[in-house]
Length: 77
Length: 222
Image 1 (cartoon, rainbow over the protein chains, first blue to last red):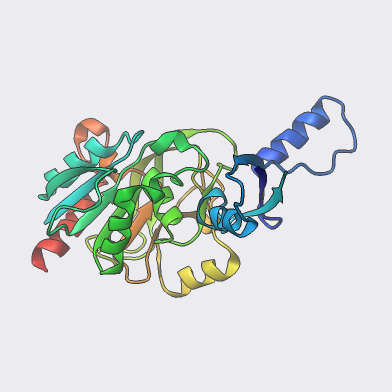
Image 2 (cartoon, one colour):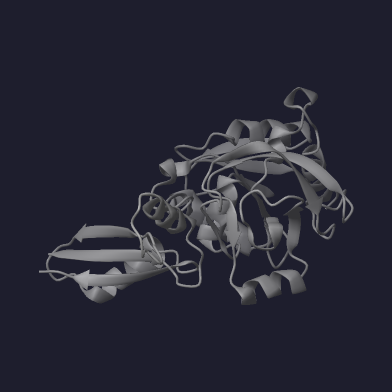
């Protein structure tokens, strides 16, 4: 089974990389991009029976730094 | 004074740190990250600069979960002294020994230059030989030195006089110009600038010596 963890900077935290991407898109002529946030996706191949609670613990203890980041877990098939 | 300098894969200021501590009079052991114990009688643990584990996942994140880091946390929790520089500060925030986090520099560029720092408190074993308001010139060399703390944490740091150093000219976007901060018991200092790279005239400056001498004086008199 697979779980996908999406880690993003929290909404109140300035994302300088996302801002740089937004500026670049504007400079390339893509109008109307009002905001860009950059994060990361972590795919976990898990033994059958691994629970979402266990993945939550992985996020809390290592995969995300909850001082600045939020995370979302999608448990796949 | 017995000091242990931790060494992770990708550390690159470990030997500079050891040299700076020895010059100040410390007895120094370099400790590999797979060790589970610090040398007996360790007074100070120094977490050096570098790019531990290639900065994978987040700067300092993997190092903070290395076997030796459990011993580092236990050392700090029993009142031991800890100095983290650059990647060492990133490791200390990842362990939770210091609050906040280090983010990508606001200007997105790696910044490598000597910068002026203002001593923000002399009430610590690291800064007791300095005076509040003094200016030190120390090198910085980092891509992720943009210190972030939420408003409550920042208010607590200020209220408890735990900001040790501020940038005179903010090079990276750090909140409140913070360059270095102390733990609640004032025995853990983490800073982005490199005092160990300014302890010999050949380095271009010796302003870093004051921090190591303060520490060794404190621990030798204790």
